[in-house]
Length: 99
Image 1 (cartoon, rainbow, N blue to C red):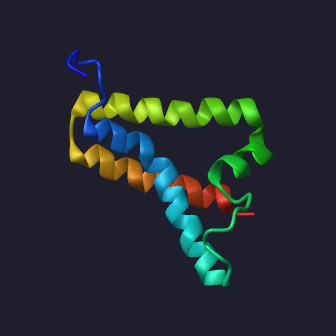
Image 2 (cartoon, rainbow, N blue to C red):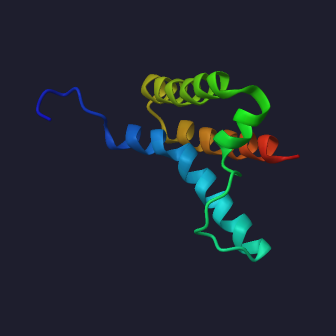
Image 3 (cartoon, one colour):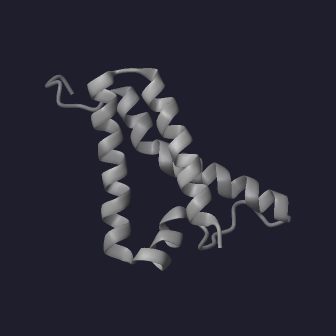
């Protein structure tokens, strides 16, 4: 870890932001419907995208989103970028999860 080729704490947070927001959304959704929040289902963002656009496009899309947000965060190095991406994620998940 002394080589400076490691991820910063902010970058790790950005990488884990989409799965975290999706997990929190599903947790609240399951609780509101009276289901066990720890039971597995196919309502995660990647399952919804696979059903709509296919596996390969889902893989490329989600990786592109994560890589672009790390790029913009390193370019501007601002907390506003993280807030912007959290808002984008919430909108993205809301749009994709609609039937």
